[in-house]
Length: 204
Image (cartoon, rainbow, N blue to C red; front, side, top):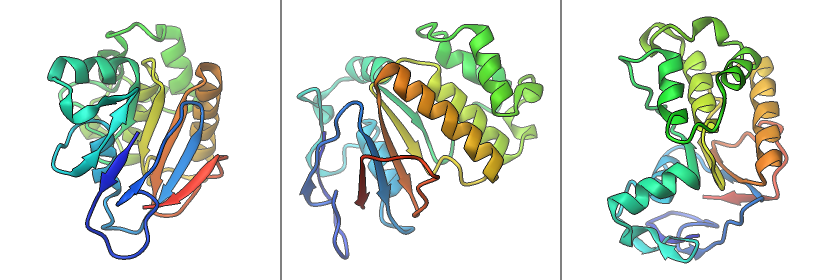
C-alpha cells in the first residue's frame, strides 16, 4: 500500500506517487500544517473514499472493501492513534482501553496496568477523558492502540502534548511492541522524529 493522488503544492513522496509500506519497516512522514497528514491516515484506515488512485493492503483494494472487511482489517492488521484521539467521553480511561482489548483479548489486565504504570496514567484509569489533560488522553489512546494485534501501527502526531520524559516512556513501549510482533510503524509529524529510529523518512 498505497498509490495516492492528491492536489498539492511542492514535492511529495506520497501524493501523486506510488509508494509501498512493508511490514516490519518504520516510516516517518513529515509535513507542515495543512498538507493532509490526518487525511492520509484516514485514507489508509479506510475512513475516506474521496480520492483518486488506489490504496491496497495485501493486494486487496481498500475502497472495494465492505464494512465487514474493513472491520476485520482494523481488528487484526491496522491499529491507529488519531490526532483527535476519539476516546469515548462517557467511558472511563480503562473502559476505553478495554473496549478495544475485548475484541481479541490481546493483553491481560496485568499487562494493561503495567503499560499504564509505565506511561504514568495508572492512577487515572477510573476517570473519564473529560477530566484528563490532553497529554493523559494521548497516553490512554496509545495504550488502547497497543491492545490489539496489528501489522501496522498508525500514529498521527501522537506525542504533541507530552513532555520529554513521557515521550521517552511511550517511545520505549512502542519500540518493544514493534520488535515483539514484527509490525510496521507509520508516523505523521510536523517534523519531529521523537528520537525513534526509522527505516525511511518521507515528505507528504
